Length: 294
Image (cartoon, rainbow, N blue to C red; front, side, top):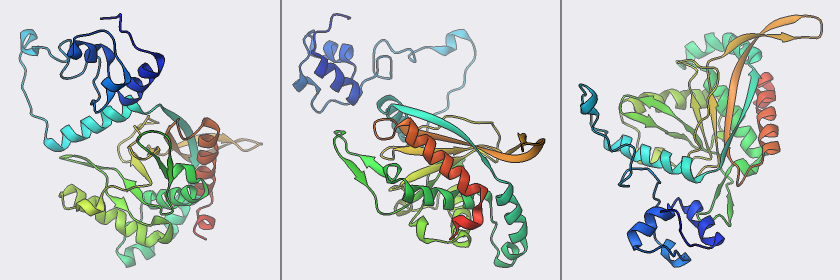
C-alpha cells in the first residue's frame, strides 16, 4: 500500500512517534490519514513483530534442526526499549581516544592503599569522575527532552548509570550524586553495584534516573562500537579495551596506552561540534587525573 494520503505534518509526526502509516491505513481500512488518527497510537514497525508481512515470522525448522529458547521478561522489556530508542532517536556517535598513561600510573601508585582499604580501584572509577565533571561543564548533556520534543529538562544533579553484563541480561544501576563523591567512594560503589547486579539484588530505587550511562566493554575487547542512547538520557558513553599505540612526540613515535571513547548522542539536543568539545574535554581530564579530582 503505497498511495497513502497524508500531509507532510502528519508524516513528520508519524515518523517522530514511530508509527508506520501503511500499517495504520490497513487497520483503519482507508488511505487518508489525518492527525487525529495518530493520537494514542503505539509505535508500529514496517516489518516488525505484529505486522503480517513480518520478516521474523518464519518457520526455521523447515531448513534444519532448531531449538527454541524463550526470552525472559527482563530481556523482552530491554529489547522493546532498545528498539524504540533506535527507531525514535536520531543518534550519532563521536569516536575519540584518551591517553590513560597518567591514570594507569596513579592506579599503580594507589594499589597499596587500595588493598589496605579493601577496594578494587578500577579504571572505571576514573571514568565516572571524568564524566561527572564533564556533565557539570556541558549541561545539555545532563538533560532530557520532553515527550513532545518542545522542552529540554536540565538536571542539577549528576547520576551516572553503569551498564552491567549479567547472566539474566543487561542491568544499569546508578551512582547517585557522583559529582559530590571521591575516587574511593565511587570505586567502592561500582564494585558493590556490579556484584549485587550479578545476583539480581539491586533494588528498583538504585536503577533509573541517570544523567548519562557508561557501557564498558574493556574487560572483553573491541576497538570501538556504537552504543544505543538509553532514553530519556540524551547521550551514552562507550568504552573498550585499552591498547598501546605509537604516538608522534615531535621527535619520535612513543608507545602510549590509549582507550577508545565512543559517545553516542541525540542529535535533536546535541550537535556535532558540542559532542567533539565534550569528548576532547573528557580526554583531557583523563590525561591529567590528579587535577580532575580538585
